[in-house]
Length: 137
Image (cartoon, rainbow, N blue to C red; front, side, top):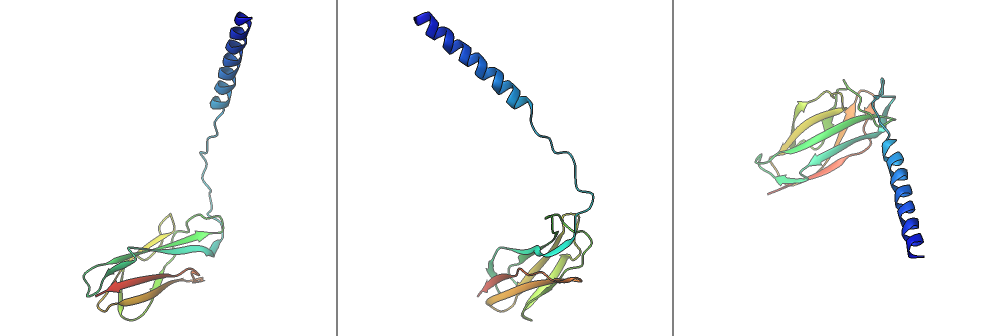
């Protein structure tokens, strides 16, 4: 009886190894890339600020990243992005036109402390998502 139990355990182990081999061997590979990013989506596009808090007086910068995306979530290249906010903020475009990932970059500073809302506009309209940043004294 003991030999029979050992034999069954050995059979189950071998069966498990065979199943694992076939499952691991058939992995999915994604090599393709979309040839067209799809239709521009103001709802999918967004802004990102880092850091959210900086010192006022022009001492520290906050980087604003604007991502212009399609309805498929892919970047839309070649879109001119403009930032808008209170006149107390100074914005410098590091890259005002989106790259292949749909990314445009800006650096902002403020001479006065306060919390400011920032939004972005492209030729097709305003990106719906906004960011709020704070400049401390």
